Image (tube, helix red, strand yellow):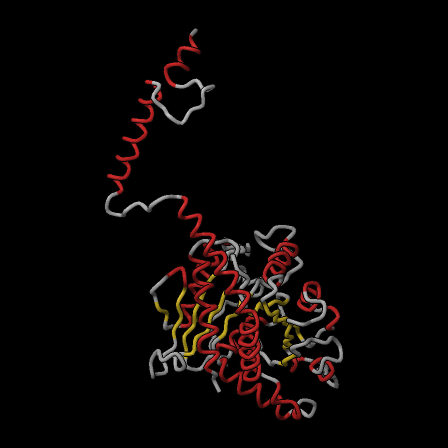
Length: 374
């Protein structure tokens, strides 16, 4: 069931994210609680996000596609009483007030906005794209999808592309209030997982890391992910969730995200290795788990975060007072005239030797000019 806590806590964080972004702050003055998704280029991050949303809305390709951080804010329209129908739409922070009812158009806008900041030849940028999705079928969530870790530069990418992407990821996951969502393909050795290596670098005890194992259906015959899913290989406090993603062939044949979710549920329930734990696998459980983790995490850090915001607000207000009274919007010319008249009078007083804020040793105005020439 959707909790009342979720209804109030997550939207507060989403509003703060918007405020910091619109204010043009390169780095948020407060570490906000958020889910940060990391993984290698081919780990299946995009498929995971699309299944959480239930729609196909992210660009795809053979090379690196996520080239800017995507701040994805999901809002349940039923819980927040935003209409009783089944309408779904998206809104971008850089196109305020414009609603996208076509998820294909959302995909095109992500591509267009990515090219605007990062170029159209595989370049990357650390400037985030903020996207809100409103739907009656999503749970309230805030996720940050980062560019996938890649080792070989292509197109306009610099030679040190891997280092740059890692530094970008480290910047986000070093936030003590973030939860690391480490996506790894189950059909490769977990010891070589780029996302888990990165997570353990910042969170060595695994206290704020959740693992997602994708491509479980592509594992070699005779093998399964039981030990990995149960933390027998690498232990994480929030555990692991298994996923089955759409293949490229599925996408080419028009299989929808919602059909893929149904097939995923069927796969886990019918597989002899996963049937007993199928209720803890798949998209439905992952979404609920992410929501629960985020809500509990926000509740935990909210008091200290509120105190820090209050302190910073008081400091900014004190600094604002030192700048004097604000300039009226409708009388800027009058204020400028007063400043010029004040400056003119001070200059004339200096020439006439009438300044009062001088010590006996100061030379100013006419006396200073006389001293220079004689």
